[in-house]
Amino acid sequence: MDAVPLLATLATATVAVFGSLQSQQQYRDAQASERFQSAVELLAGDDLTTRVGGIALLGQVAQTSSERRENAVRLLATYLRVHSPVTEEGRTKPVVTAPPTEEVRAVLSALQYRGNVNNVDLGRISARNLMESSTDLTGLVFARSDLSGSLLEGANLTGVPFRQATLRGVDFRGANLTRATFQEADLTGAQFQGADLSGADLTQVKGLTSAMLAGATTDADTRLPDGITVPPAEPASTVKPPVR
Image: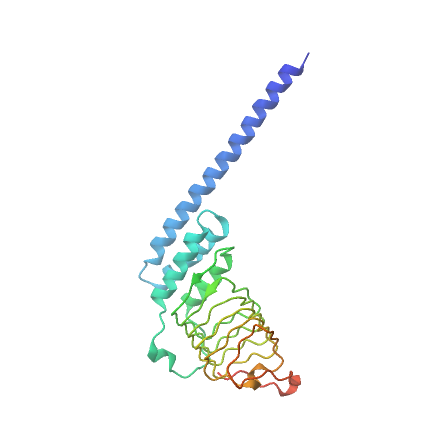
């Protein structure tokens, strides 16, 4: 005989919980929207510190808001293409051991929160000397970019396009380069020892030698330039450091 009041109480509690969850979601959405707008304003700032703050804020939006993640990620990529474009003159400069710009580092750090957003266009950017060893860089596009001198040892670069990129002295040792595409890229002085090149396309590349591929994994779908073979791995003591 107490069933009706009990059911009424349960129904009221359910409505209250649902309303509370809905309010929390609305609050999070509003907060994410405000952060996104603030980040856009900061990116237009006159000084570097302000712009880097905007980049970091976009990273927070990508991390916390699945609804705004893709917009945040695409905006980060666009920002880098505008503020760090590659030039033909820049491609020919010697590779020196200098860190990438603060903006480049900030954008790459923020993009770790890209989730399942793919085809993130970082093409035609200048981003030399990246320090991204053992990092997951899948879903990024580096076609025609200049990443010379970068440390990508052990990174996950599955399916990443590097077509016509300048990759002089890049350390790809132990990286997962399955199905990566390198057509017409400049690989002078790069290192691929121990990398997984299954299904990778290295046709028409510049500067590649067989020694650079020592110990790399290939399969029937790997495409190499004519005359290039994959020798067995060299003893660790004889492996030369990447050319910078």
